[in-house]
Length: 397
Image 1 (spheres, rainbow, N blue to C red):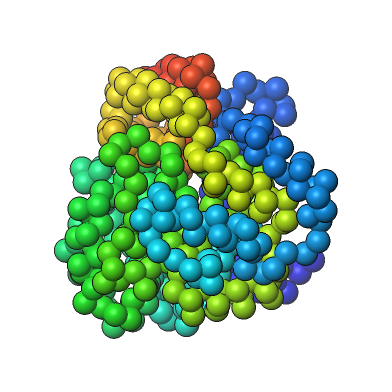
Image 2: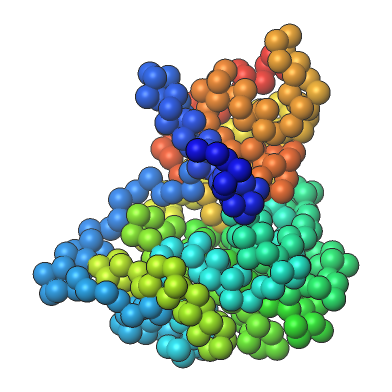
C-alpha cells in the first residue's frame, strides 16, 4: 500500500523497543541460535494454581458475558480493600476503573486529561511506552533525568525546575521500570511538597511492580493527603501474581477522573475479560505470590554480584522490579577491530549478534548510556548470560 496514506500519528509513532528486541531474540532462536533472552518484563512463573482454579470455577458459574466498563463490582471492591490493607489508602468503588492491562489505564488517563500542547514531565529513565502514549494524546513529553549516581531517582529541585505554566501531569513508576530503583516515602514526600504548590498538575503513579520489592517496603505518593485528589494510581495483576496474559490492570483516582476514563474506555475496548476479573478478585483477596518474590530476590543478588565483575560496567543495587540497568558508556567509541560501539542501541544489537545475549537498549527509556537486563529468567540463564557478556566486552577493552 501507499505508506503516505497512513496517518501522521502512526508514521511518527515508535515501536516498543522491548518488544522489538524480544522479537529479534525469537527470530534468532527460530534459526537455531542459542539466545539467552533477557528482554521481557514477564515473570517466568506460571500463575498460581488457586488463581487458575478461581477462573475455572467462574467459567462453570457462567461468567461469560460482557462486563461493566469500569469492572465487575467484586473486583472493584477487592481493589478498594487491597488499597486500604496494603497501602492505607481510602477509595470508594466509583474511584476504581478496571482496564485491559495497566497500559490501558495509563492511556485512558492521558486521553482523558491531556489537551494538545500540555506538557507531561517524565521522571527519567522511564518505561518505554510513556513517551509514545503522551504523544498519542497530543501531549509534550518533558524529560527530567537522573543517572546511576543518583540511583536513577530525581530530586525535588529537578522537578521544580522542569515545571512550567504548560505542565499538566507528572508521570513515573516506583519500583521503576527499567532501573529497579524504588522511591522511599521520604523521597516521594520531597516530590509531593513541590507538587503541593501546583494544583493544576496531575500525578500518574505507576505502581505495577509494587509487590516485587526487596527493600523497606512500598510507598505511594497518593499517601500524601494534600495531593491525593490529583494522584492517579496505576496497578495491575501481571507482575506480582504472574498473570501477564490475563490482561487485568486498574486505576484509582478522583471520581471525576475515573468517570472520564470510563468514558474513554467505553469507546475503545469496553470492559476487561470476565474470567480474568474474577480470578484477580480472588488473587487480591488472598495475597501476594511470595515464593516468586523470594526467588527473584536471590537472582537479583547473584546478578548484581556477577555484573559488577564485568569490566567497564557501572551497576547500582536496585531494590525492586526484576531488572538491572547497567551504565555501559565506558564502551562508547571503542572498537574490536570490526565494529565500533557508539551508543546503547549498537551495544545491544552487537551483543545479541555476537554474544547471543538479548537486552534492551537504554535509549528508548531516556537513558542512552545504559542497557536493560531482565532477571525474570532462570539462575542458569543469568550465570550463562554474564559469562557471555564478559567474553563479548573483552574485544573492546
